Image (cartoon, rainbow, N blue to C red; front, side):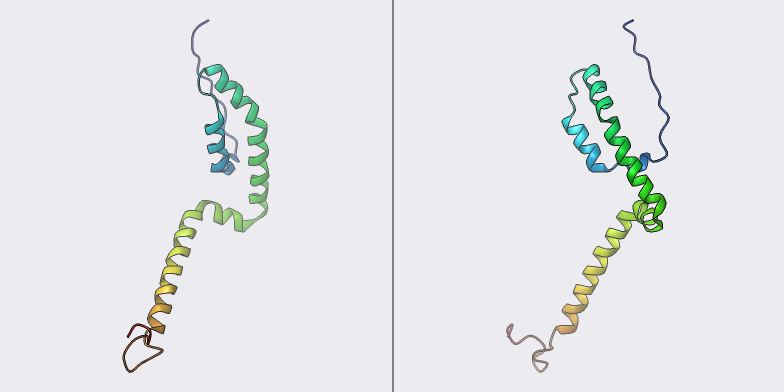
Length: 110
């Protein structure tokens, strides 16, 4: 009695599908004052975490698109942002001087 023992649990195969928002909500709402309250809170949310991971894991196993997007989401977001910036630059450069080509710019600027 009075000794701390380490306990190890095997990781589930669908562990990657627990959303970050669920993790943040859990860590913000948990009472960290004692080990007992931490463990009790963790045991209470296990069914919620399990359902979420199972459902998202099932959807990922069915959809090839989700299996591709899930690990590459950050790269996809950055690519989309870069594409939007490039398209906006293209529109800005293509329309510059379209109104008044003699003066080389917009008529409202001159």
